[in-house]
Image (tube, rainbow, N blue to C red):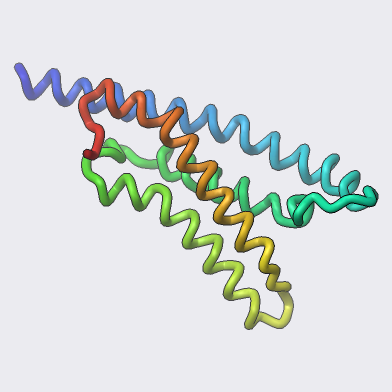
Amino acid sequence: MAISKETDARANAARALRVRAMLVLAVILPVHLILDAAYRPWARQQPFSDWGLSSSFTQVTAVVGIAAVMVFSEREHWWNDRPSEVLLLLVPLIGMVGYECLQAWLPWTTFDRMDLVWSVVGGGLAAGIKRVVYDPVARTSGHTGR
């Protein structure tokens, strides 16, 4: 009977994580579209600098979005162990940084150092979202990864 309760707790936690990941995606996608359709054209006409956000915000939204997709697509609990928890944050960040670095050698793309900076900002935001949105589910199900 104890195994069944533990299995049910894991299934409920996995379900709750997927719901939370969908909520993160439901927020990050409109933010991305608003930044692209409204903020970027407006910021480029302004006399001030936004530190490259108007041209690099896609790095932030991509890192957060990829992490949310990873949580949503996972059938088991991400926080069963520490390596899985770390990979959840590192895979999107390394992927976006690697993609940007690859652009330095591809003639049809443009390498931008600010994209690297904003990718790291996206990694920090993803870590914050993980801590606030996903970790409470992991703690209540008894799987903290620590």
